[in-house]
Length: 234
Image 1 (cartoon, one colour):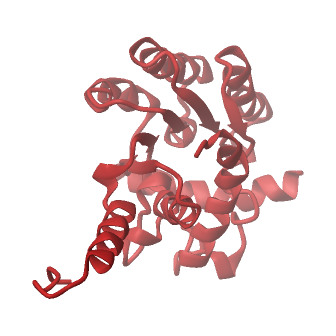
Image 2 (image 1 turned 45 degrees about the vertical axis):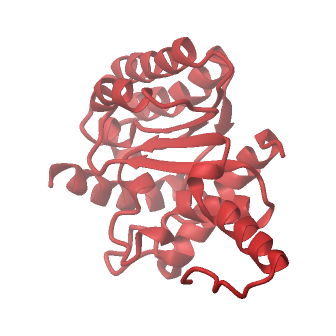
C-alpha cells in the first residue's frame, strides 16, 4: 500500500502547484430524411436531454493540461452516455486550484439549475496545504447538504482522494478516512480513489510525469463509470 501512496505523492505535488498558480436540408429532402436529421440533432444537442450530471471539482475534473477539453474525463463520461442513448447531460464544473472552502462558496451559484446526479471531487488541495481534515470534512458536508436541500432526489457520488505519506501517519490516516466517512454519513456512492491505476504510471501522465494524459483520462473515466453507470436510467 505504501508504494502506491508514494507514487501518488508526485501527482499531488503538481496539483498543489496548480492551485497556486450540415447545413439545413434542401427543399427537396424527403420527410424520412428530415425525421432522421431531427433525431440526430436531438441526440447531439445537450438542451434536449432531460437530466443533468454535475461534476464539481478541481483541476482533475477541469482536465488541466489537456490540449482538447473534450479529453477530460467528464466529457468522456458524456461520450459513454451518448453511446447508450441515455438522457443525461454532463456539466463539467471543475476549477483548477479549488479547495473545499472555495467549493462551498461556489456551489450555490451552480445549484441555480437542476441537478439529478452530483459528483463531488474536492479535497486534494486541502490536504496538500495541510488543512485540518475536520475542516475539509465540514466543508464537503456542507456542499452535500446544500445539494440535498435544493434537490432532495439528487443522487450523490463522492470521489475519494489521498495525500502523500510524508505528511505524517496521523494526518494521512485522517485525510484518507474522511471520504468513506462522509459517503456513509450522507448516503453517497464512493469512488475509493479517483486516480487508481493512473498515479505514478508514466505512460498515463503528461510530460510533468503527473497529470493524466488523454490515455490517463480514459482510465479515470473508467474508475468513475464503474460507480456512475448503475445510477443511470434510460
